[in-house]
Amino acid sequence: MDSASIAAPAAPLIDPFGRAITYLRVSVTDRCDFRCVYCMAEEMTFLPKKELLTLEELDRLCSAFIRQGVRKLRLTGGEPLVRRGIMGLIRGLSRHLDSGALDELTLTTNGSQLSKYADELFECGVRRVNVSMDTLDPDKFLEITRWGRFDRVMNGLEAAKKAGLQVKINAVALKGVNDDELSDMVAWCGAEGHDLTIIEVMPMGDIGGEDRVDQYLPLSLVRARLAQRWTLTELDYSSGGPARYVRVEETGRKLGFITPLTHNFCESCNRVRITCTGQLYMCLGQDDDADLRAPLRASEADDLLDDTIAEAIGRKPKGHDFIIDRRHTGPAVSRHMSVTGG
Ligand code: SAM
Image (cartoon, rainbow, N blue to C red; front, side, top):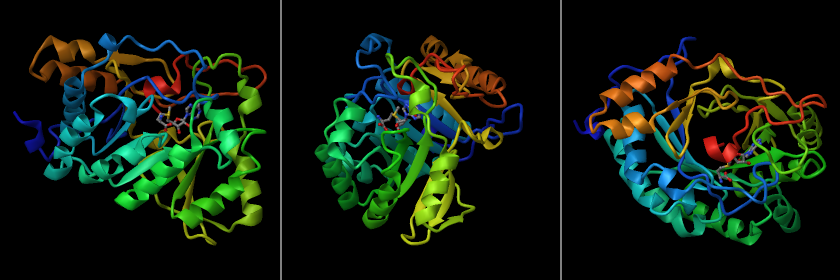
């Protein structure tokens, strides 16, 4: 049956805690053109290309989740826009927007390729993108990303705006690196018409000698500091993700806080994640996973795949327990954020 023709889910995915799984995040590649210090080591070993799901397989997998009630799909990575042929996948998936099966198709990107792709993304029904940017200082940007070019990202943001894409900036709060700048980023986002989400650094993957305790800045502190300059009003708004939002009254823009360490919001988690090799992770902060590549490749029909997905959702844990302190300096999970996608 053509999955595009199905608007209503056959059987929505509900986990053991009664949470409906309506949001899928897919890491389409583990490769990235940046090497952010909190995300990757400078020398990374990436997966051999033959391990990766093909674009056709990624489409089939996403479509299986959509058939089972997923309404929001986010492509991430690694850097999703460096995967060869990515626009073909996005164009193909946009049929689910046209059919009404999907509410939102979006992506998280470092912005380096947005100048090239912004118009086409809009044509494919993408309306919002998250762009990761931790600083407005070009030198610091190079220090954080190791390989990133600030001007390229700024051009990408301009192109996104011109194309009509709404941009949300994601900034990871890094102690002693960008803490003095976050307030100015609120102002800049206000002037540019972007929302902003600030994220606590999570203990994921070996980052080659960098110390998580040195990086970690609790957002309770960040928020208290921002409140000295800005009037922050609590909002009921949810973008379907883990951020809790306030409105910055002076700019009128939304400001989100993602606080997996100081306050997790696992009780309302509606998300699962797939890696570019087809491993399904039911929780960002736990190691349990389910292999979807084998059932995907075992048969052209989707029955086995659907059963494997349903069985895995039946094991979704209640939550994660990230801790960063002097006794817990290593990663809570061994995989990098680029594997499961941020
Ligand atoms: N390349 C894309 C990008 O830069 O947005 C998508 C992948 S990146 C892994 C997704 C997000 O995860 C980025 O906003 C990045 O800052 C964030 N991230 C990576 N490692 C993290 C960590 N250890 N803790 C918190 N956020 C992290």
